[in-house]
Image (cartoon, rainbow, N blue to C red; front, top):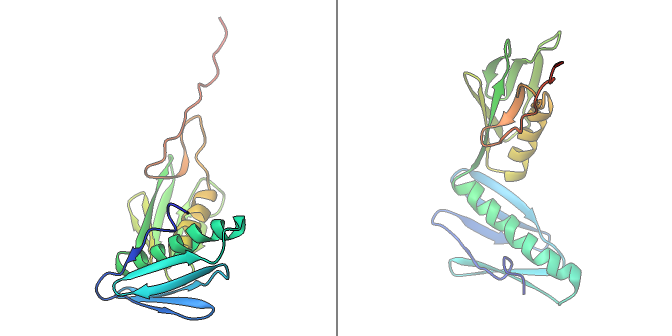
Length: 178
């Protein structure tokens, strides 16, 4: 049995879960998310818990079991608390402006770099820090990864865009002649 898949999901107050044939709808105070139903799993709402079981013991069913439970759990957490990732810009002459759905950055290129977030994701700027927030964990992570890929941190001076909790392993520069 899957260690993650067999754990029940507690439904907090204010969250409603509707299980359909092809999708599971999770609605809460922050919004509504839809999780597709995997054909090899069964999802039931029993009281204040959601229980995910698999139909057989095939390897694909075992793989989908934990994933289905994790997707539903992420949807429940998203509509109650939301998700956020923080990015930090390091570099001389690098600038950041904007907020909401669109930000503009000066990253050492000959032109300013503009980034527009998809629907459901908010961008907040504070000096040289970007906060990506939303209710869909996958979208928040994807937007943060796309922003980071605009100027990845380099190993010599650490210039670029990095996650706040990320550690950049530095390399030594030229050794010089002796």
